[in-house]
Image (cartoon, rainbow, N blue to C red):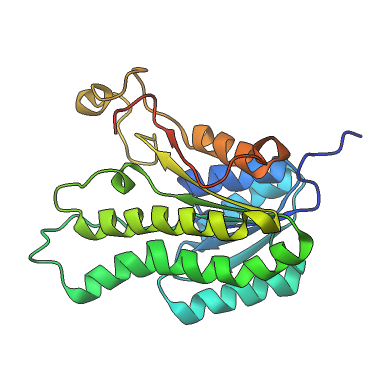
Length: 246
């Protein structure tokens, strides 16, 4: 029987109940990982992800909880470590993307965006890094998106959070490369997630390849960065965007 490239590794993916997060979970399970699945509210969606993971032969643990809540993140990390002993791969995927005038954005709304997309990445990475360092191997991969590279109308909180996540990626890559841990970011472009129109002419006009990407396109890049093929890639933000200009 052929040994899978990530056999025996464990991966945590925040926001993995659907779309990109689900595709990443299934892809890493196909490569041999056990998967810690996270969703904020939709247990049924997470159960669907679990079935996909188990169909690929991976063990799955569902840890429900809002990544914006600090105590919840601590409990998620504790549950994952109790079940699997260590988490080797972290994929920071959870985010919320409200569009609202900067003037009208409340402090609470600002903090919710930042806590979900940035502070949670800080806390969950910090929780799992000691095990990675002990094992001399680890991967941290964060989803930044186009908002990490340019500002968007009525998206100040999102852009600020994603720019900061890119900064965190660069800093961690420098600090932990000598410990065997690579840290990278992926910037998805126009991805065909639930509810999006694949034939939207305004969207297609910005994509040189002429079509939207799929969650599986993003998951393929995660698989590369998590594998030994990606061992010499760290501190990078890689666009999976069909050539869309940044």
